[in-house]
Image: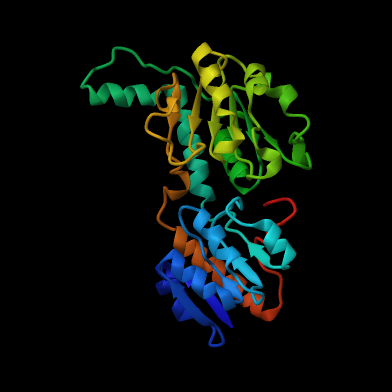
Length: 312
């Protein structure tokens, strides 16, 4: 059974592959596209993500399972996978701790205006007073998207004494539903976007949502850039509709050097580094792949099977 696999993970995978797996190790996009034509299994994550989609679209009728270390599925041709009845498993949880920590970092940096502290230090300028004076204890946060990452964010914010509300499709455990959170935006000091990228989550935050937030509130996005109407956000930052924003993802990526978000008032852009701020990505990804491979070969349920209709 042929499996197209990333050469970068070869040392982690090869010693544990079953004898009936024929690995094809790719080192370039062209190799991945050529190898996948007759493969049954594929792990073809590449950057930029359009290369991943191109490889999947080059697959043949034998393809049965695609694995990815990424939680978001916006790089994958879900329509094609659905049409061919191909199983897709994602990497939900692999980077969850790192991404959650980045969200906390963003909130702390905003509360204490640590960006201004760092810039003052770069200038060798001893500040006479703290530029940020917000204490997290007692503030309220809305986490839009309360899956693995969202719950980790919520747990960590609660440890700071914050009142945390999540948003889920089901409204489970006291969370808000997708049709209810907008009416409550004015209650929160922090709005954190941690939802999966789907058609339903595009432009979650636009001019109306920003206008509904407190003028003292901050927007923290660690999800996808297209969840925010960036033109509306720029206008809101310039006129003080909200206090500020921390943007890990942007649209597009990389953000052009002359893009106005770089110099927008009270805006921190962190270059979509959250998921990369760790050293265990491929170790965890390889372990998940091997667990799922054993289940796949045994005809047993696999972990993190994506809902191709829901998009995550």
